[in-house]
Image (cartoon, rainbow, N blue to C red; front, top):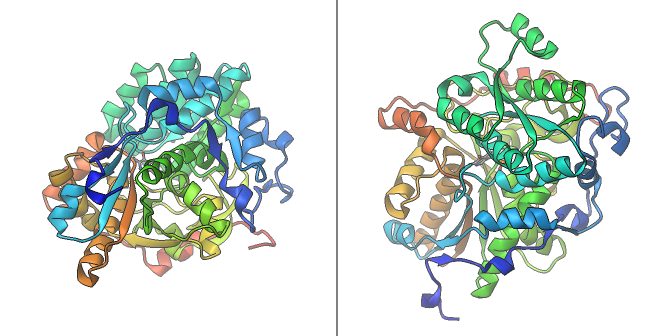
Length: 459
Ligand SMILES: *Cc1c(COP(=O)(O)O)cnc(C)c1O
C-alpha cells in the first residue's frame, strides 16, 4: 500500500483486539533469573508466593514456557471499553522536525487512568475476584497505577487499599480524589498503620517516602489481612505479559499497512510498557525472523539500566519481597527530590534486564529538562499533553529522527506514548518557570545504593 494512504490514526477493529497475551520469556534462550526466597536463597515456589499474590497470577509469573496465554472474556470485555488504542502517525512532528524519518506512536492515554497501567490492573483485579478474594493492596507513586487499580477493582467490586508515596499524596491531591471516587482507600506512605511504616518513620522522621517503602507496607497489609493479596503495577513478569496487548496491537496495525519499524522506543520505569510494546517484535528477533533496534529510555537521575548493577536485589525497602535479579541501583536508592519526571523505581523488570544483558536491546538515559523540552515540542504540534514518563520516549524519538535528518535516512520509528500529563502540571510549571534542574547522581551516591545489595552467592 502506498505511503500516502497511511491514515493519521490507525485504529484496529474491536474484533482485532488480541485474544491472547504473548509471553516473550517462552522464546528467550536465557530465561530471566528466578525470584529467590530472601531467607533460603532458593527459587520461590508457587506455594511460597501464594500468600502474597493471587494464584493465577503466580502461575503466570512462573510460566516461561507458554508463548500465548488466553485473555479471559471478562477482561476482553473491559478492554473493549478503551481498546484498541490508536497507533498514530506523527505527521505534524515529522514536519516540525523536517525529518525524512517516519514516526509512529502507540497512545495508551485514552482512558480515565490516563496510562497503560489499566491493561494489567483489570487483569489482576479479575484474577483476584475469580479467586474469591475480598480485596487487594498496592502502592502507587505518581498515582497512575493506583488510579488504574481503583477503576479495575470498582468494576469487579473488590476492595482496594492503596499506599501512596507521601510526597505524591500531598502534591497530587487530585489523583488521590480520583482513586477515592472509584472507592479505593488511600494512605500516605510511610504510615503509622503498618509495622514497617512505623519503623521507617522512626529511622527517617519527616521522610517523604519512596515506592520501595510503599511496597513494603502494601505487602505487609496483604499478608496480614484475610482475603487480601498484593498486586504490583510494573516490574513483574505477569505485568509485562498483560502489557503485551500494546505491542500486539501496534504490530497488527503496522502489518496492516506493510510497515516494518527500524527503531522501537519506550520509556522504562519498572519496564512494563516497554516490555509490552516490544514483546512481539522481540519475539521475532529472538526467533531470528526479523531485526529491530530497541531502545529503553530512563531518567539520568534514576539510571538503573545505564549505571546500575545486574544483580539480585530486594524489590522493596523493607526487604520483605522476594529477591529479583535485575539491573538495579540498590533498594535504598532514592532519586533526588527535585526529580519530577517519574520513572523513579530503583530496579528494572528481570525479563528486560536479561534481554539487555544479552545485547538484544539498548538503553539511554536523558536529563529531565530535555525531556520536558521534548514534551512541550510534542504537545504543541501533536496536541496530546504527554505524561513526563512518556516524554522520555518522545525525547529519544526526536533525537533519532534528527539523526535521520542529518543522514537523510528514512527510518521508521515507533515509540510508546504511555499516558497523559494532566496531573503533572506542577512539574510542567517548574519547567516553564526555569526552576527545573538536572540532578545526576555521582558515582559515590550510587555506591551507597550498591552497598545495600544483598549478600547472594550469584552477586
Ligand atoms: C507507570 C508509568 C510509566 C512507567 O512504568 P513502566 O512499568 O516502566 O511502564 C510510564 N508512563 C506512564 C504514563 C506511567 O504511568
